[in-house]
Image (cartoon, rainbow over all chains, first blue to last red; front, side):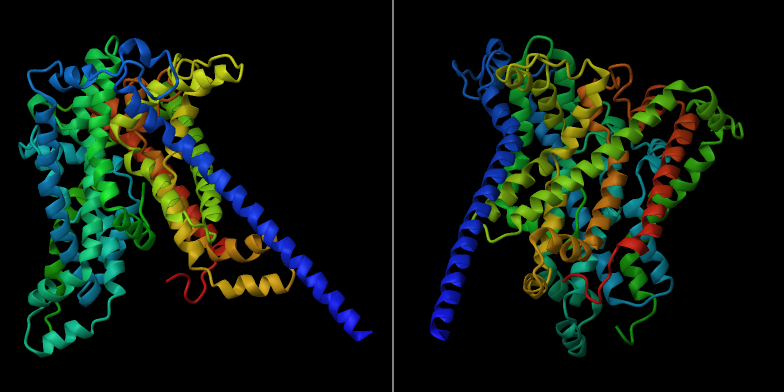
Length: 299
Length: 296
């Protein structure tokens, strides 16, 4: 009697187990299906862009596929020459000239400031920290006009200084906040030991904190590079000579001058404009994902 | 660190303090002052009292249109983006083998989304003869004049931002992964189904992250500029249906050089964002759940 009951229960459990497993398999299949479908819809525009940049102008709006029927490099060749006296090489170089000092300045200033906030007590600390959060939430629109007037009075218009200097003074509160969060999670033992051995705070910062914080600093640099590459409004307001244009402005210029007839040119230059970001992202995706997961990022 | 001068910390944060004063605090106050002036850039600002604000709210129809477009944009984009990001994060939060691959693939648009090149791409795929209409044709539907029809144009700008849901999704996913697994087990023992578990365990535990995403996304959505500017050549066409406030501010400030009026618009926008943020913070006491250790 009991044995039959037990075996019935065992059979029942076996059956539910099998059902659960089947349900799990179906659930996993549904998940993969949704993920793949969404992924395809998400990435198709980019795939199409790359394919279409090798199409002839006649083909771009004639075929939804991304594989060009008569592949051509005309878009790249004509686009690279641009309708200005400069080639796209100039605009890439300008973008680089904006990014490099801005990123280095951000890394140094944000690290020092985060160190100050995370490791020291000083008057008005709470108030200053509150301003970091406030700037995080403050829409740039409010300060943009006076900043423009300030840079005009300083004679900085049509130079890269308005793009460099605020960042070099830890103006991107988000990065400061992110590094403070990282630093708070790092134990102080090593720093205290070094202090006991007679190191000063600057030595501690350079030889102990920076190496420990290195992954976070790399994340900060990567995000700053990406955002600067995408920045359009800053250069639009401050840069007026074409020879100083970064890629974002140059691309806008090429739309204005050639879009009516030469589509593949614009698509080809769009691909080139996106290429550095894509390459950096795929080389360093781990830092990006970890950067956002732990710091909480905008975008 | 004990024993150090009280001012050593201030020394380290001094770059920030200088930047704060010069590039944020003083400009912030100055722009408030400018909003009460007439300032055509070539001559000095002239105090006009409330004139700019009166004009905005009584006779400026462009402003009224731009404000309503902005509010519609923000209140559709932010919920759509967050719900979508959370939905995908929940699907990904499962022992899937390819989780890293999908996470990376979904994040790509967030990296590129703000760029001019992607806005250009949007113009092409939603063009009258573009890929989207070709796909509609495949299903036997009529092509839609996406950027010519005021009913659709703003939605396309919304889609551009929803497309960039990756970073919000990764923040959600990190929060989901830090939820204590034993809570799920006890819920399963109590006979809760998946939806009940999600509603009464997962959702409350990730409310701090929902709150964070909500605030950040709202503040950013109000400032959308690149997409509509590139896609509509700065016009906010058709019929100003994509003329978001940042476009209007840009035109007033840097095309008409009417700095006083532009500052007033900026301050109205700032005021709206501030009120919404305060409401969110105030209401958060009712719906955001802060456990002792909310997430690692």
